[in-house]
Length: 339
Ligand code: NAD
Ligand code: DAU
Image (cartoon, rainbow, N blue to C red; front, side, top):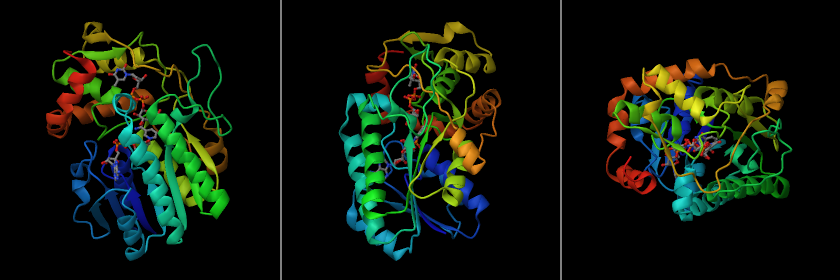
């Protein structure tokens, strides 16, 4: 296969490229990434000399570049990760979310049609389904109606609808996956788990929004990669697959307490801060479709994977210390004030 991976210098995209090139040694990957604040070529240092890998710095909204790449590189498969991905930043300024997540996806879909791409796999999120109440036993599944509530999730929902429309209207061979919260190596330290770990390593408190009783369906990033692999190789064209990891509910407070315990700290390291506007209470995923149809299931247990993640951030302090400077500090001050 010749893959065009978009957003491959980000958290999940870089984990996916490393995973894919290790497993499919004959395949070629072009990584198209704009290198926004979230893109980091260091994530892919270990493969920069691999002849089957090529990095192209560019914007998925650039139709000429997108077309040229698909044509010149004889791309047959697109795996579309590129996005603005942080809910809190989408609340501060929605505009890059509208551009990249909607116009960028549209630009890639047009390119894929023109270049007769054999598979367009679109990476999306469970956040498009909105919020479950804490006392509900319901889980999101492939038939759950869309109900996005943040500029981020609304932009991802728009992208999902465009991808579906290109399948129904133009027969573009697409698949979509909606995944829950990932965590693991190379996770940008603006998101809860890496923010908590790196703050503690720096001797700073962990900011917890509101009452801390929000629930997310956590998945180790490598398990997300194996799910995408299963969909690309065995998934049915036109279908959506939900991907998640948890079987039991766990609150943000519980996640932070687990991190503190692994790192030998107590609850005094938690600082409750003002809540996120429109904060979705709970996400839970029913991942039985991908399990029944493609035989996929997560291989990592949450506690074990969390320990591995703490170890990774403890060993790779150079990686995140370089990030927690400049633009990051401006954002952090805007978002958290003095903490
Ligand atoms: P990330 O923010 O870590 O990385 C995004 C990458 O996209 C960066 O490398 C960035 O430079 C690149 N990018 C942004 N705008 C671009 C543009 N206009 N052109 C080209 N490249 C651009 O994001 P992530 O957490 O790795 O998420 C990847 C995808 O997975 C996103 O589509 C996100 O919505 C989805 N997703 C994420 C999670 C999660 O928990 N992180 C869960 C489910 C789905
Ligand atoms: O569900 C999938 C989504 O998961 C992805 O689509 C998004 O790209 C990804 O960023 C993530 O979104 P969340 O908003 O759920 O992740 P975040 O790590 O920002 O927050 C997780 C939970 O922790 C959420 O309830 C908000 C809370 N939180 C977050 C931060 C950054 C805090 O309590 N304190 C914080 O400082």
